[in-house]
Length: 232
Image 1: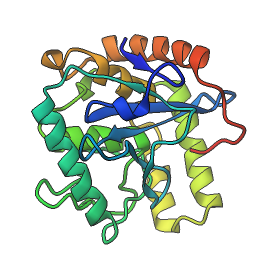
Image 2: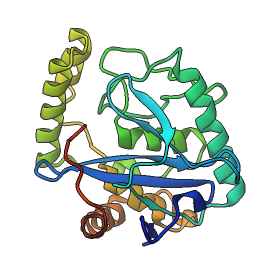
Image 3: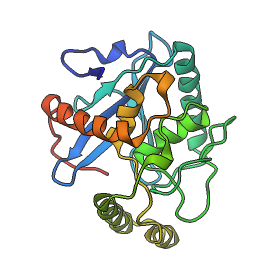
């Protein structure tokens, strides 16, 4: 697995696009993921991620807790995805993205990058944010139908609903999400592991992404220090 990490690797050497991931709370098995990208070889590496409910975030890639995952994806395609990320960020000021574990398909306007799913309970997680981008760019990362419902994911979804309630999410959004507990979950490490597989084998099945994701978590824990605070 092509893992990069500080201090051995230079984050400014990112080849246009990588998936970044860190552990935010080991006790609850909580990871967070986003996209490292460069708009040009001379500009600093950026991190684009859905940090939480209505918190689409873009920042310089300074957080040393992240590791990042390479891909053999064609450089031209990487540049196209980077340009689309720029569209999403521009559109995001007018179309904020809710936090939700519902279906991610059809989330973005393919031309403008605007988030277009507006029904109560719709939105994305940090992981499905990445999946939705690649799906929109017609480079799907995962074979969704190969994933199954897992008891630990139901517990995680219930916890996210509680957190959204505590953080003041609109009651209609929370109620809609409550009825969706039990939806298929794509974990951050599974998305990162899928990105690492040969791009000519995309979309990746759960049979590959899940064990490779588990292996990634082991390697991540060996390489990246755990931060003192936890975020979803």
